[in-house]
Amino acid sequence: MEAIDNYLQVMIDSLNKKETLLDRLIEKNAAQEACIKGKAYEEVDWDAFNLLVEEKEAAIDRITAIDEGFESTYKLVRDEVLANREKYRDKVKELQEIITRLTDKGARIQTGEERNRSTIDSIFLKAKQEIKKQRTGLKAASTYYSTMRNSVIRAAEDSILDQKK
Image 1 (cartoon, rainbow, N blue to C red):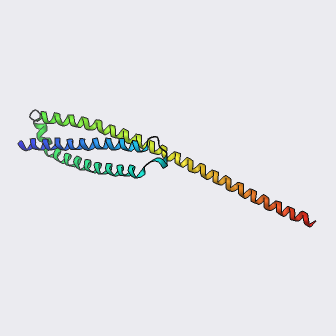
Image 2: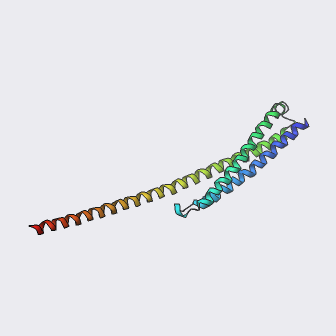
């Protein structure tokens, strides 16, 4: 029975570690938002932004490992805890409270991710529109110069033909 208490404490500790990692993800989301908010494509420090992405990926990998360990530990104790709910009530309640906080933080992270993705989409759309505008301008200039060159050549040919008469 003491082993079950130890397993439950391991589960609590792992969820606390997960909470710390989720807090870091919230901070990284805020840092990414600061990198991109209100900036044009060329103003964004993409190296810093990508470094934050890598740091978030590492934290997510650690969270995944914690979740896998939590699940395997839960499978070991589930039957005993369900059979003796009253005995483990305090630990289960603590687990539930932590899980509630984790769920809230997960939703906060998801909202931040969506906001950042939307901002990046907007940055890329504006950059794409600017490139398209520049291409259109270059094409118009090229067409203008081509037309002018052809008209000068025609004018020169007409002038030569007029002199031959």
